[in-house]
Image (cartoon, rainbow, N blue to C red; front, top):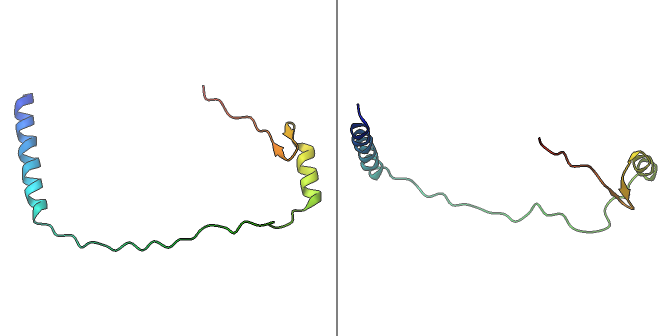
Length: 75
């Protein structure tokens, strides 16, 4: 088969497929969206002060309350 025959055959297949899709009926689904998944802002839970102290003691790069982490560079 040459390219023209392949294209012609592919077009025939797509045309038959699109005609068969015209006969298909699909029921529409009603989407129910519930708002949620948001947390209420507030003071939050108190953390374990000892854990926090040990954690920040082991961090090589930090800026007050933030850990400065190195980003992996892909080669």
